[in-house]
Length: 219
Image (tube, rainbow, N blue to C red; front, side):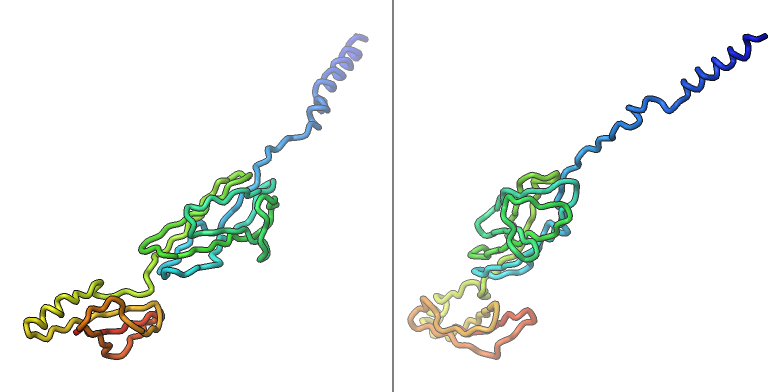
């Protein structure tokens, strides 16, 4: 019977050692978290300029962003779809050098310009940002409907009809309407056939958008 206490004690010691805290090296090993990389989070990717006018430069078109993630973002290249658009990074209103790191937490804008030049109708231009970042490349888009500064209705004045009518001893009169992007005066008409006159009639009509319409008689 004397052997039982010592046997029990030995079993208890073995059990205690087996149920201990485990390998201390494994318990204290650091957990490696994968770097998710930095991203540019934009509040808007598309800007619609609506109706714009030819030969006009539109500036300060902004695409606000914030840098998020675990590491910096670097923009090295702007790919522009046409020569009508330019872009810069602005941080606190100042140009940020291309290729310099944008650290997490920074806020800024991609500031773009759009030169309507001699385009007409619907025009889409894009800015593709390339560099080092989890979400790059990213594309920003500008949309605009380009209108001429002056539009005439009808688009062509048939002066020949006026001259032929006179040969027939008629007194034909054609009316045309000219819409301008703002108040205007016509100084002279180019390539006006001899014997044809154009006279303004009625009062100018001002539109809410700032445009103006004037009417003329061709006779």
